[in-house]
Image (cartoon, rainbow, N blue to C red; front, top):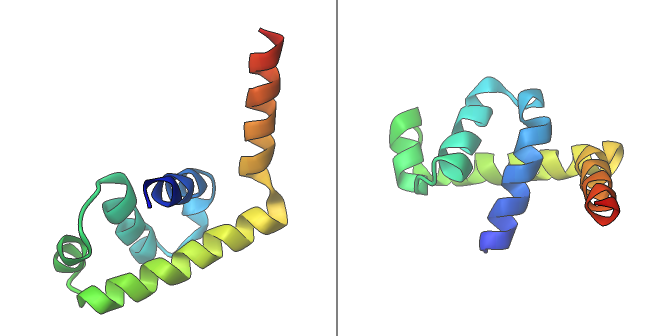
Length: 86
């Protein structure tokens, strides 16, 4: 699960600004600030299930942006190539 959260956090860095501001806040609270679903729900005045559903939809959006644009993949490949050159 940690690796999955790390991947979503990485995609959030690249594509987060494309998300709705409210959803971006939920994603940052949950993934970057490491708050629980309940804590995130309390901050956003939403139900826990509402936050969970919103996060799942946003995760799908982030993955679809990456599938279309490949920005995170390209940066990672460039980073690896640079490390190999050093």
